[in-house]
Length: 233
Image (cartoon, rainbow, N blue to C red; front, top):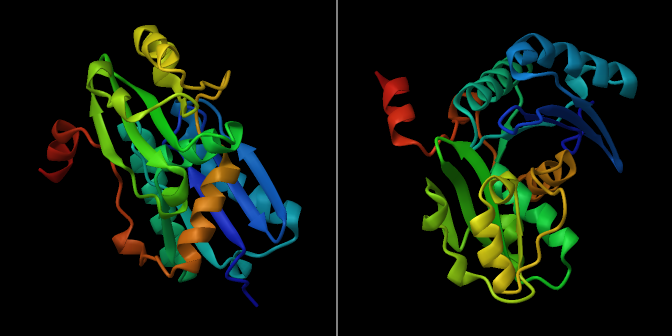
């Protein structure tokens, strides 16, 4: 019988893609190869995780989808795989923001922080970013909404001494990192993307709130209007 807390998580939106299986207190993770090989590697990795855990696909309770923002190809792949598994197994999908998961990880690294800036390199001299409050991070409700834009567009004024910032965008744009240091913002070393444990944590919280989607309702988040416009043509 399926346990609704047996979760399969898929994140191909991050630079380091992975899949994970959450069973009770245990978390099994498989890191996926470079982007060009991910489409062929996702389902075999899922099968490996289930075999390692001694579970069948019918034992799963839900699919946790890291829905972006992120690169177009990776976000699209994750949604396609999550939808296919959810359709085939008649499972609900729980959507998790990659930026919220990064902020959740940042809060764990900076226990005194009240706010977290998640900032991920979006290429084209831009970043994906959002600001979250510790009290609402499990709700995935940002104080400053998810956006894509120039580093200068980030609302650094929302952060104060003791708050935290993380993500690959900070290493790509050192001027922004310097401005945050001047404000006394904590920037944990090498924290450049979310961890699968953080995606699972947000997925479990959303599942407990009943925030589940049918397979067809699982949608990607790209943030770039020109990309989404192309996909709708």
